[in-house]
Image (cartoon, rainbow, N blue to C red):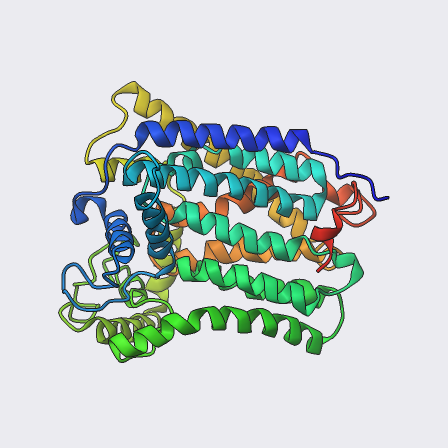
Length: 440
């Protein structure tokens, strides 16, 4: 008879703390829905389209009255399902409360997935330290009552990495079934925000580290990529019918790419109406394509300026870590904290971020040195680098570094629990993983 799985009480306690912090802050701070698209920005759009989907109205632009695909459909669709469920059940509270609870659940799930990733590269103790860091990470808690997509993307992206990293890499490359499972969860994260698409490269590098040959690398990675593509097919078909164009995800990449590309840009947000972007009155699809061409042209013709802008975007992206509070304040159109209380929260959040990121930078260098022997490390290291590089090529926004937080926690935790001191596999250095997580 197989022994009953032992309950990890420490992990359970961490998850309970994560849930309580998010529910307490979320339900206290969640007061109203976004009321102004100018003040609330993307949060208003996500809420509006989520409500429209729930009402069966389709994806129709609220400024144009015509079909749109400006934002990736994943997060509005998730909100729509949540709103529909709340509308058809006796759940108490309004949209703000419902979304706060949804984000608390997603945030707690992110803590669990972080544990799985950390355990995969350094054993149970490293996983627990990383999970604890994410559980009480100030900015991640602050995002709970917002209508921003960060909590949803964090849960989906860390789930995908957990599927990849928790494979028993000492037994060889992952099976096609696990590769498909990775592609399935990765595809869900991509339809929320495409930042996670380079995780396919991390998966391929990890497989290559097992020295099984390029055919196996191509086969496993190809299966994962094929599943991602299959998940994008329905939305691509919808866009082909509604917009008469090939749009697999969204049409906002062009605006995002060109807004911070001009000789006088400082890398920050700018409306894509300046002379280095296309005419903002162009139809959505045409403007997206034109802005992408102009962005590539700018990089080609101004390489020195582009190099400077990359540094400025990175600096702006890492400038602070209280964007969750700012998102909350934008929705409510007022400061949620006044005077010294607000300064204390932002100071603690920014200090926490600075300390963990310094530790993560050191941990990344140390883990990268052993990726050939421990392929799970390649999953984490390459994915973390991708989450730094992609936003640096767009525009400088502190929100863009938020998806890096769980991996930064894992990397930083390696300075507390040092897996490179073991002469055996990172996972084998501790208790064996459950069979369901170690093999496909």
